[in-house]
Figure 1 (cartoon, one colour):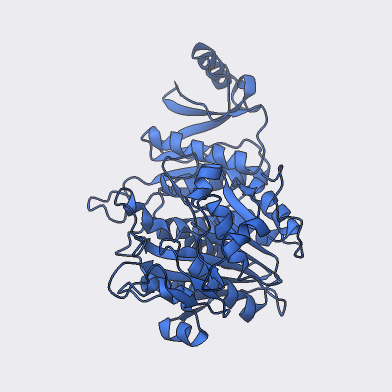
Figure 2 (tube, rainbow, N blue to C red):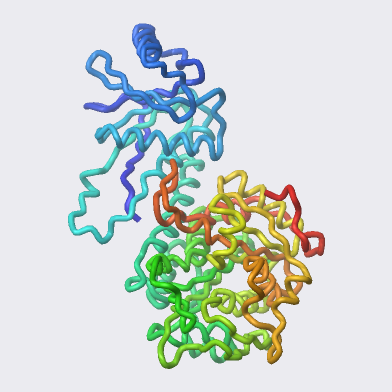
Length: 497
């Protein structure tokens, strides 16, 4: 997980050349104890170039052989997503100067606020360069010195954020990897390495899944020369209590199978394992932070390929639950993987709640664009906690409906249900399909097809693999309050963003 940032806390100004970084409030407010002559020079420079301290705006000023990078904070800088974005902008602006060293002087900021700025800078520093032969990452390293009256490198706040950043980077790395390098077996091997963090990792091969009757999951992978896997990652931080469960779809490459996708854009289907990546990254963060709760992560890993042994449209498979499924479209495969993964998780672990993530449908992008993950749930209490976690982390979800009318679209003439509905409401019918494999556990399905990969960079997220879902799940686990299933969410709600 390559990163360009080296973060160092220091009590004194660093020796040698370093750009001095100053945070500037609205109307050019400068920290009060800055040298008066320097402050006057900066104020004159800001006036000359009409720099107002607007949030995220930057300006480079030279004075007495020292460079000063000014970064606007706006009217009020708050901890959380806003501070993280500012940190991301800080890192990008520093890197764009070409300097290798920057010094964020002591602004007497609240520890939480400063930790969030540093966290944002670290998130922004991520880049994936594994396959460049001319790799100059070491030369591109940026060192950021931070002077603070309270916060230090070994502070719990910083240790917490380092573990969380590591989890995000784990997910991003997985999503960026090409499918000839990341396939079910190699993905599972990477999960095994997380045992170093204290996770108990168990890998089920095809023989083990056949014994369990996972015909839905195994049917998806039967056209590939790469064997399917189911990975269980267990964090035991909460004694004997039932775990919180996170479940991820991991289609390491999706050709569509016999229902072959068009060639244009098919290369993007390497990230059809974004849900499994998010769960894996979240489990890495949870273990790294030593959270005092029991959490289990389960990911189903398959490759959907067309060959002489591939699943055909019209086939009927028997899921682990015993329910039979008529496969109308082999490109609606992720829900088959999740059907068995959800049933396995619920029956084996009897979790207090279960959240699954999947790049499941293009229909969710038609519905929501790329601003929100789509949330479907049988629990209004769980919906509220996911919305709150999304607001805190900047990984928002929007509440979508379920309901009997959509379930009717999944009726098959020859099996218990079919794997697609009609031409409309595709994201909803996909969620309703999954609901058939959940019993009385509070459950949410997050369709993250519009969030796992980004076509453009933002202050803390690169172009490409975003790591979306890691921070959302981490926050949900952190703030978890017991909930129950209900029917109040079956039709969604208008203000559930």
